[in-house]
Image (cartoon, rainbow, N blue to C red):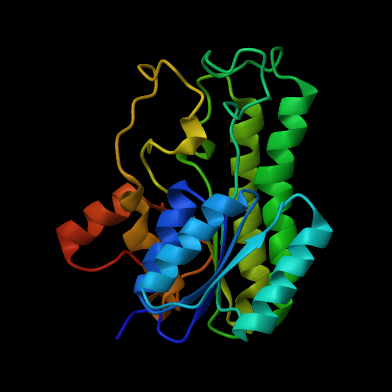
Length: 263
C-alpha cells in the first residue's frame, strides 16, 4: 500500500529536476500522474519512469504562462485520469535561464541591471503560472485535496541584494499560498508552500559555469519526504504553511514524526 494510493497528481515542470523527482516519487507511492512541461521529449521520459513504477502517466505539453494551455492541461488530466487530488506548481525559471541576460554567468543582477524581459519572464512563469493553474484546478478538486507551491528560501531571506525579480516572484507566491489556503479552508482543500531548503544541482542552474558562489548542497531527493507528506492524507490538518525540505528531514530524524507547522 502506497501513501498516495487512489490519488491523481498534476505536476508542472515535470520534465527534469525537482518536478521529475516528485512525479516519480508520487507514482512510487501509488498515485497516477499528469505531467506538464514545455519539453515533451524529456516529459515522456518522466512518464515512462512513472509507468514503470506502476502508475498511469500522462505527458501534457504546456506553457504555464498560457491560460488556454493551462485550462486544456487540467481538462485533459480530469478527462483521462478521472479526478485531481494533488497539484504541484513546480514550473519555474530563475535569472540564469537561457536568453534572459546578456551575461547569465554573473551573480544575481541588481535592479538597475534587471531587464524588462527578465522581470516579465520570471514573474509570468513563477507567479502568473501558479495563479493560472490554481484557478483552473481548484474548482474540480475535492475535499482532502492538496496544492503544493514550490517556492524558495530566498523569499524569506532577501536582503543581500540582487535577483529581485526571482526573489519577488517567490515571496509573492509564498503570500498567495497563504491567501488561497484561507479561501479553500472551508472546502477542505489545503494549500502549502515547499522549497528544498538548500541549493540543489538541477537544470535551474545549468547555464552557470562558475558555481563557487552558489555550490550545490543537496540532491533532488531532499524535497521528497516533505512533498509526499504534504500530498498525502497525513497532512490533512496542515494548510497555509511553508516547509523546507532539508529542515523537514532533520525534524523527522530528531523527533520521529513530521512537523505540523512549517517555518
